[in-house]
Length: 416
Length: 168
Image (cartoon, rainbow over all chains, first blue to last red):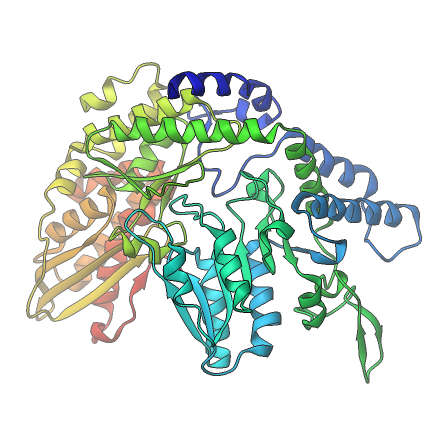
């Protein structure tokens, strides 16, 4: 039954039509067609994004919010139009709630320094989980050092799942903020964030969701989720690098002091006093990544132009297929076996170090990530120095997974 | 050529050959059965090397007899290149003086990075590492153990050193 259903639903998604929109997928790597399975690190860009950035650079570039001249007005309109697209994309209430940042890392740092640092007192607690990316650990460690607050870490189980009860039992009277990933970058686990956010809200705990691995793969509606902050990066959702978004609830952002200071974030400066600009500009000091924001707006347009339900089912079918294909290879173990997973497989092959595996796969034109995935506590938990990770996107194919499995099998035999 | 690689249909010959140069039999053998692997008590020097990029970690312990390395052992976790390189290094430097071992490091370093490196016969089995230079991302794997050895030899109190890393 399942196989028939699988065949029907994948037939509805024309992966080749999607692939044709990504120029880089036509290239050869080491004499073989590129099989790009490192989308968790950074996804590739469709022509719509490349063209939007190119058009801006060729025809409209000027500094924004400053000049009365034509180019400055055009650039400002393009930049702010991109913000509007992002407001719609995550269903924020208004443009005041969408701050352009460099990426998820900067967004988390912004909240740690601008929201958490002023309110934290010695003995207060910040709660995270064991499967966070370093970008959702270190900024909290730093702010804890600065304020005397304590970092509390909720456990995961051997499948890489986070249990709501275990997290909630750590939400105490001193918990000021709960931060967690929407999707684990190292394991693929989709966290039960709706229930976690609900539990935090019931205890008046502010919530931040690291959505870096989620936004490209599932719909995100920040009002529906009810989180206070949601952070994500452009380049993992088919947009440019160096641009991302911090969504924040307006009441919270209003109360927060600026994170960096300089131009654009002020209304008036005298040497005695500076009056800060309103939202969102208060948090966008200096000339921003204008072309990046425009490219990200185009990436939103690209995603909205897809049948996202079909795209999700395609990615889910890729996950099932890869799990089965790798599971058949002797000595190969999938790390992270949560019931609800995004389209990502972390795995190890006994006797083959992930680094060697990465080199051998690269020689076949297959790009995977190998290493600790900036999630060393996760690796520590599984007692592994590193894993190999194949992370899929809408343009990946079953044939690419066959090539991956063949490469893994070859590496296993070489090192046996 | 290992049969596993030889059997690949349709693979570009140039890259297949480069890969075979990287994973030579000597490398595969020293990865499977690393020599001088394990602890060494008491040691005159013990230094930890760490490659933050891939998480490779090794601890090098050595005994010195005056200026001579009388014994050397390593332990840790790493890829085939890093394990085999450390294994080959311990074999190569045991019995050498500090200065001699450092000269050898210099030669190995050139072997790993310089296409115009002189003929490698004098390096003995270490010449098996020459394939690494076609894979720039893997040079640090092969050189981690040598950087660690260098740190151990260049200081009189290596125990007080922080872990060596391949990141400058």
